[in-house]
Length: 495
Image (cartoon, rainbow, N blue to C red):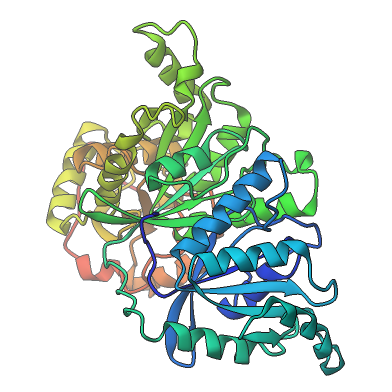
């Protein structure tokens, strides 16, 4: 019996290409499940929260049910559908009204009755009222609740949901989501073991695993409670170079994977140990780095590395630092999902990184540290070498990731290398050793000229790679509040 993660769960099951994902998207009111004319697009269980007539519930989309197939992936699809049926409170059985009754439909009805589940039958693709008679063919199954619907055009979906919701109203209320839920996104190239890691973390098969690349197409999310915390873990489709993507479906899956990074707290970058860090790994890591997400590097399939010695990990770590030099601060774990080696260390590492990203430093502590850092390495001169750049004040403006603003003169003249030095020093000083931080250098307002720093900010180019730009910077932060703050150097050249 699987561990119940969701309460008030409605599962959608049926043969391939009958419109299950279209119905799923229609009910949740967003395009969360991939829809394509090709059969078998959905492979894993996709969950989402939904509401109808004031009643909240969870909805689960499943892959096509083909019990007679001997294909490894299709056999796992059947297992996933059976798990969904077992875990669900109500099942929506979707059929294709245009194709009529199929032997697999009869088989699935028998399974639902053996499982003693509440279920309704949706005869889909009845786009017009004149098509409703096509649903009558399914009366042969002896079902009580039969609805002629069109998921694509939303015909009959309301009546279907009304009956399904009535069946689950007596079930327990959905518990509120934990306030401190940590969202993790498992990212990486195809076939590096992302789904295997997800299954290990979940303690059950929640994502289909196959030796062929590109098995995962949708974003699969699970909720896990461990170490006193609640995690929402997203397993994403593999991301590779656009020129190597074979079809539009793969491109759309990759876009969805990148979009998942927007909502995660920590990105878990999975690398194939047998292949070593590649250009593709660096490209995937770049997406997370660009969004300033904490990154945990998981070198998976460590059991496949041959002739390991006491120095193998150190050599591999050096290769990672070269290939992913812009995220040298990111911690690394060497795991094997197949052998369950060190997988248990992933969640504690993510907790530590999450806590670091949520840390707030008082303004007084920041400025004490700033003074010591500037004494350690005196700021450079301006580009025309007429005077030394002055730093006045520093404050923290946000968390996740931690963002700081430093008021100074001539911020555009501060070289990238000096900004990187400041970032590394603050990371070391305040325990941000494993996460990215953002430093924004902002020119101090000059009252005589009536300059408005927030206006200057709006006029700056919004380059995603320029650490000087921070689109989340609050315009309320004004250097006029810190008029008396100034750090002076004895060797400063007068203008």
